[in-house]
Length: 458
Ligand code: BGC
Image (cartoon, rainbow, N blue to C red; front, side, top):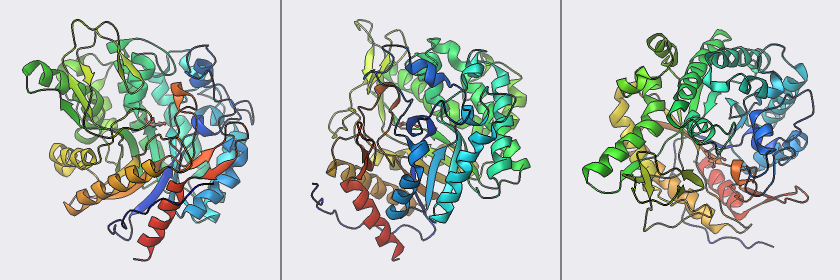
């Protein structure tokens, strides 16, 4: 039995047309990896290698959303969100990544979209949430240009099938994380440890985004965004060594992925020279206007110069940063932490949005917060309520300061496969029992439902 949380005071009022949603992704929830003609993904292969996933698990069943989607849609309906961000699995639709389209794979998303619409929930598919088809990975994955072209062909196939009912699209999820963790450090699929030689994966994902935008527009799509991860970077001190390290980190994690999209250029010429070309032509494709810009926000980062005496990698919320990198994460003191160890700093969301306004000015389209959330155990998750409440108030401050933010999506609807962490980190508003896969709404789910009802009363 769970007890009702002590309700914080009602949230301030958001605009009437503000979009409220929750997010998930295919590789984290679907399972059914060998059903309906799905091909293998880089994550299937990565998770099968002993030692890659901390709790020894994999996502072959995940939380069985593929079969249980009607129940999950009912949870969305009861929650009262207007929109649901999910991802389409590229290997389900194009099993080899290029070539033949698998109609049975599209059938699944067809059913899901219809169920969402029947429940009054707007479907918001993300076309890529890190599940690169293994056949393409074996040819170099995002390190090679062709992957961007194959991605656009896949985007076209999805739009051809769903475009009559889907009106809001997201191309990529967090190309920064896939570049850093997947190709740079090897802690995510495909497990490559190329460090700075991973940069072509960033460029090709951005190019794939641009080509996919063209493909979607050609199918009549008028409402397209991307979901990029961003967070403020705080220098560990005012020393030149620390500010230089923090600026570089900020450049690689924030500006490398936002500047090309919003300004049509890379933030550093030396860095652009390392990228496979034709970079100038590609930037024209990458920087086509977007209808909105999605930000996934979790935490700020405090960064300093590397410690020459460091004995080993620095643990940054589960990510191991090798000591030879030109920057090192430093603890952020004085804030509560999630179970993952991530500091809870709602004000950093307002700060981040202000930074975006300063950096991108008139080039910044409306913003949507496409992910925000936290990992905490337990059904009676008062900490998650405090987290969401705090971040929504911070977001409201940004709106009051004139920032054009159109929506907010909680990560995540359900506890799910948290990548290299396995199932140990629970981000859901709904608890999922690992043995039975039974879904049980947490206190935070009821809190959000009540908050949305309150907002709807106007
Ligand atoms: C990703 C999600 C992930 C979440 C929490 C984001 O980086 O898009 O897939 O589960 O953060 O780590």
